[in-house]
Image (cartoon, rainbow, N blue to C red; front, side):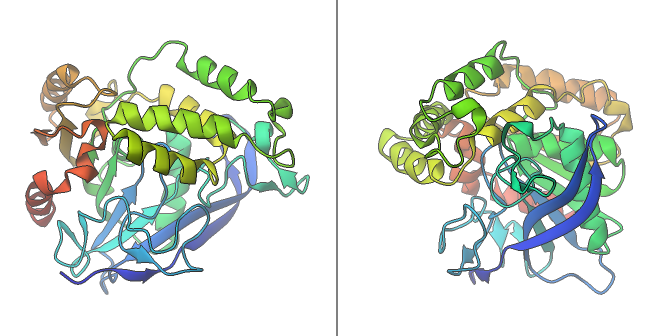
Length: 340
């Protein structure tokens, strides 16, 4: 199969983006990449959305100087096993848009970006956002590309949340959603956000959250990331290396901002709104999303009239299964998308 190369990170920009809280971002920016070619009728687009701390670099290999903030030059995208020429999401057939979430630290508007009203990073003043805000901002990007519909919205983990939210916020706009290692509502983790905030604030460089000119909180971020990757199912050596590189570019306030949005996510009372088909893929060894809860989600969606295909991956890769063991479900994903 031919490889995607020389991928360029792009920026969508809009002004006065109103959040669900009532606050307004003077400037909204979303970093994104595209793969493949948009058809003359603009009916072959697939939107890809990422997990909690990931980026918009979902496929291919970036050239030096074109990778965007927080994306290593030459690194393969996190869903590269599934997106590309001849792959499950075939870029010879589909136009793929992969977007960095609002609030993230990889090029989209977030706490580490400059507040145009002050000339300084937003830092702890960045407003609270919701999954609905993320999806609403992505809809503006999709509209700017002249897309009146999507073939599918695809994403793992928090990307699965965004996929479900797309289906609830814009019923029928996409033919299907694909959510992997995820759920239609956030897992219950009482006190988790408060513990995260307390741990970050305990870094000696915290400075009331204004650490940008104070050396940052890299050591704390690295340890948090290392522990997270181990919990996801990554080996110690790989987790250590990945945590070191990630901590140098990520922002502590983005961890908090996105975690707050994650914890409030729940569309289980909105199934009646969903008009799209669903491919729901879970890992038997995922420690974040209890697979024992999934059959009930599937049953409830079917009772609501949703056309849902449910797949359990026999993977030992835990929460990383949908990309680390992409080969286990690539044929299923490819067949599902082709039938849309």
